[in-house]
Length: 101
Image 1 (cartoon, rainbow, N blue to C red):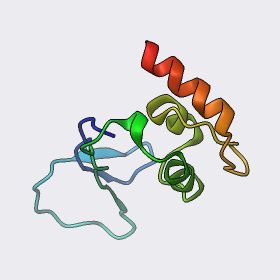
Image 2: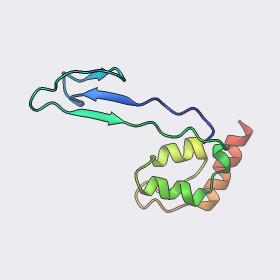
Image 3: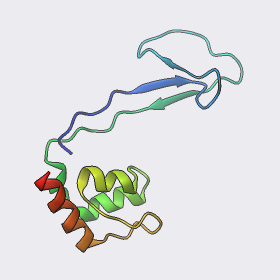
Image 4: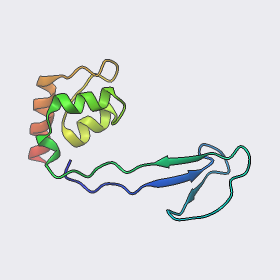
């Protein structure tokens, strides 16, 4: 939505006490049972986040690409956190509030 994309992250054995972030370029051998999590960057985009089609933002939330909270905070799009149904009236109000801040 017009912002900077986050860099990729590589995490060895995520969600464990031994978890550690790996550098972007590394050569090493994994031990049996090791897990590497690759978190790819999201696109920063070229247009203003508040101009993105609310239906597309709601679809992204429904597909798990973004959370309902992020849809509201970044795109000003309000979706039900369970059904991901778009709330058009609340979206208009949220976008107006974000534009004025």
